[in-house]
Length: 286
Image (cartoon, rainbow, N blue to C red; front, side, top):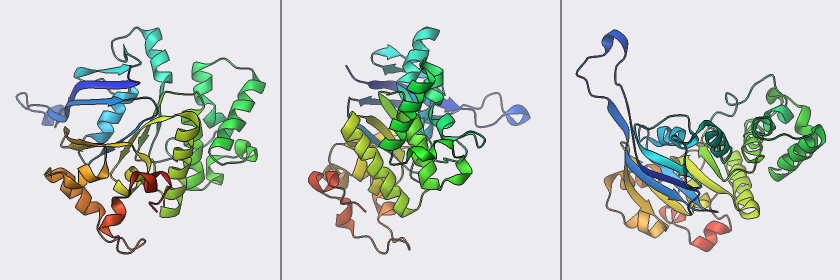
């Protein structure tokens, strides 16, 4: 049984609201008949340009946006049609790390309070048990126990994103949805966060949905790559060679955009984006 199964999901938003809304105006579909299956220990890269529908699909996976049609199954149970108690249990299995680490945490809470939020929501632990789990989570993301009592303003962006990852994995979820989780970081921190995620995947058999437009990071972390274009699935690839050979215009545009020159990286050679699976596992992406 798949950990996460998205079947024929469709969702649309009204293009105008209030007095600007026209009665005959059709809602604009942002996700169109999308199906994705995530297995245990797998990482799927959800790729696409701006407006492709990636983040909306991520919200649907997290239970934050009910789709207008289709289903989201977690361990075979429907996230949106199950009873209230089952829904709470299912939400424990799918956690998230968002792009803006500063807005996704409470600035008045300590690192320990932030990381322990899922424990407070889903588990009943003694203070001693909770402290142990927090220290364990900090260690897994490469931060010392002394970070527990610090506030968000005392951390760098990369450190705070690691705290967000610790929060996401502390309740031992089945899946972590990473919504542009490295996009706002500098290159050095991107490399470090990808390394942390890969280590967690290896140590805990974690499964990820990695939402990104950063092809290089997706190649380093993911086992499979799915491309969205204007809400529709236009390709799913299990090797980089398959993606390179695709005739889909959206896939080609994504590749071309990612292969452009960036001042902080210099001119990137095209073949560096198509590493062998061995090179990918060994981290030869930076």
